[in-house]
Image (cartoon, rainbow, N blue to C red; front, side, top):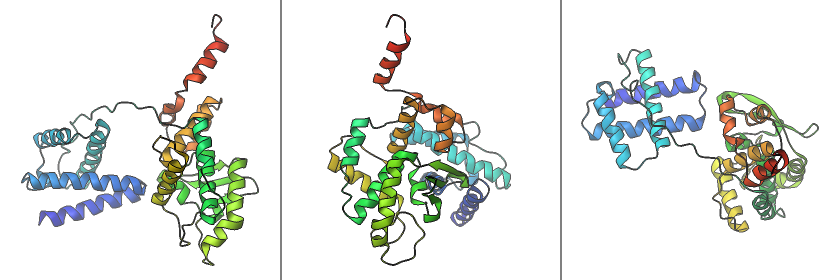
Length: 300
């Protein structure tokens, strides 16, 4: 019986995330997985229901996560997800108190974002064969991700009406349904225009599709599709760095800051709500550090 009630509670919580918190699909999926893992744990340990969780149960769960070698970052996210769930339960008077309120979240070690150096990026661009419709699309995606720093979810969510070739801008729908305009560089505009004039027309097969980027069947390209095409480009380019669309976002931010862009501008372009999210990119390459040191220090 409690399993049925749990499913109902979780569905209400997900609706709360989507409607009141404007959580992204990716965020909601993470919450679902974290909660499902915890429900499995309490079922395996014969705990009657989510309402019967104690602080000791949570400590045992953390021990289990440690035994499974989860990273600090992952454990912190799982605890944050469950704390939010129980905060919602308290609000809805499903439980009287939040047992996760007193649980300290392990501090995640700060990792500098991985990014491409310019020579690595050049190899990646050279690996694109733009002689086919899919190749033209891939070239446009690669140029656009690097030129704008948009997230892959934002990229595949673009519609034809979001691109204004007259002034070279994109209307991007970001996290929390926030919208922002981002400029598109000349290289990306050239690749986009080539794709729209030739590749996209052939990929659409006469279908009316509002998506900017299409798959080989003429439908909207997915996040997974973008990751797959980028991995193929890495194999072709023989770049040893494991790529994800987010690395291109990191590269955009790093290169912008290294070339003198101010932090607030990069924050706006990336669509970050908080400046602290952008400050992680203020690391610079060793070459840039050496250059600044030599030009600024009197006895360099």
